[in-house]
Length: 157
Length: 157
DNA sequence: TATTGTTATACTCTATAACTATA
DNA sequence: TATAGTTATAGAGTATAACAATA
Image 1 (cartoon, chains in turn brown, purple, yellow, orange):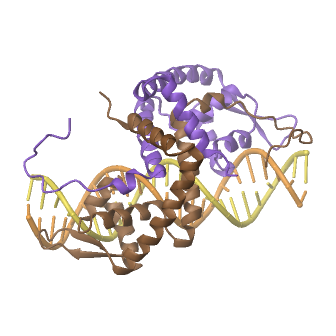
Image 2 (cartoon, protein in one colour):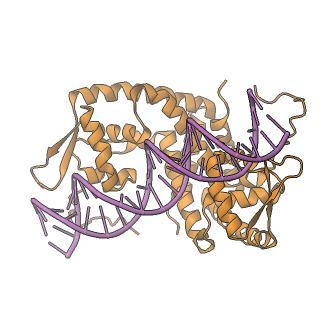
Image 3 (cartoon, protein in one colour):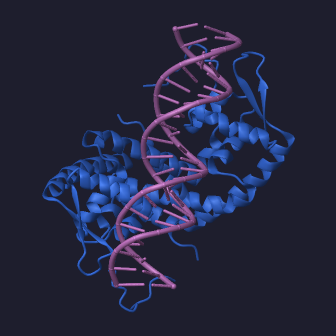
């Protein structure tokens, strides 16, 4: 409830933003910021940012993979990944074990505590995802959105 | 052409990223980053970032509006807007005139040089937008994407 | 030679507090 | 008192270079 029909002379008439509203990239950015903001609100109680959520989930599904493996698939530089995984380690959620096959790399695992934590945050994420699906108009609309995003990010011919 | 059928034992099997690929927010972020990256490549010759493009276009369509007006609609804090508009001023593209009605604020305008510049960058943007539309599969697909993004960012009930 | 993890560093973007001049 | 523009500052996120250990 923000817009009332006749505000007492706001003396600030609405801007014409149609030129930007028609720009796909701009609209994508606004939508992404809005969704991340809602994610952050729901995950504030866990003290978890989107990047940390994705790291934990990927380690759960791919235990024993190296830091570069996880960093690369998320588009994070390995140099910047160090502080992220270190923080998760210090919270007792993840473990870096020396990999026997290649002693340069660290094999990443969830701790017992980490696995229990991931179970909780995945439930919160499932709830949030359902909220987004409802706003979109159902799973078919969600699938359509995913398809369009796929086409947009397909490598150019 | 990246994936060949049988690479010589890459010894780095693909990660399972399905858990993240099903997350709307994650996919939105990847798509937005990809589109912005392409925007940056096309606008590198102009020395123009996305925020600067949007500021110039909004001033063109809304001459005489204040810094807070333009900053607010773009979701930029007025404190951070200062350096942005100052840089555009110093490039001779925009002007900040003291507003006679309210001497606290600056009325923003394009210079003659700025107007000519905007005409050029809008053409580049139109070309890029058409490229995106083609990848999506046509204007109907584009409209569908916009509709879905609208629903996603609609205020919650 | 090339790669992994790491540190250091820099640059952008974003957020807050506080100041001034106006209203 | 509240707002517009401004400065300073701090925090994220991201990018590159370089090093030691290992391949």
